[in-house]
Length: 260
Image (tube, rainbow, N blue to C red):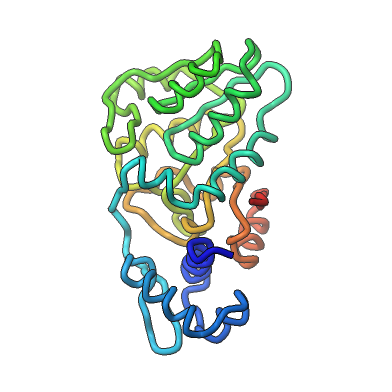
């Protein structure tokens, strides 16, 4: 396992469990305690966890920081590709309408859709410039890009014009990305305008499939846009703790763990 993947799993485990122990982590990942201490030092520097004697505890502050699209695309790229492949199974057979919101994991899904569904059967609505471009480049004919204001950092379309258009639309499935997922606060993100679009995508779809790599589990961002009860499926990677799978299953949410 690469260091980045191990640290992502440690971050997720810490966020979900609240506290982790160096010795237990070393046994879990079959590495030395010193390796784990270096991992925790990196995560502490990034603000993901707080180092304490013998281990680390979760950072409980509401996050506001956003990274550029390019930076987010490089982060956990293997997990995102695997999650996108697994999410394809939730596209209905035959004629279907789907929402794709803005996000790098959703972008990976859009690339796969473009390669497999470039026909008249799938109608797609998105508020993401990169996703619309990817689909159009692959010859997908029925793609609607919402109009409105473009946020430079995420290249997502937001604002009143987009919201008015969305009020008239419905979809069989909404594929939703998120900055964070917790049992208490559901899905959250940094920007209220993007949160507003995501919220309408969730509300106006018959089924909500969340694409979320495990580093986002247990974290909280400033703006909540959907409750845990609004979710039907979570597609994630092998870094998800079993306790989190059990908690989601108890709430009748299907959990799909994608193989990288």
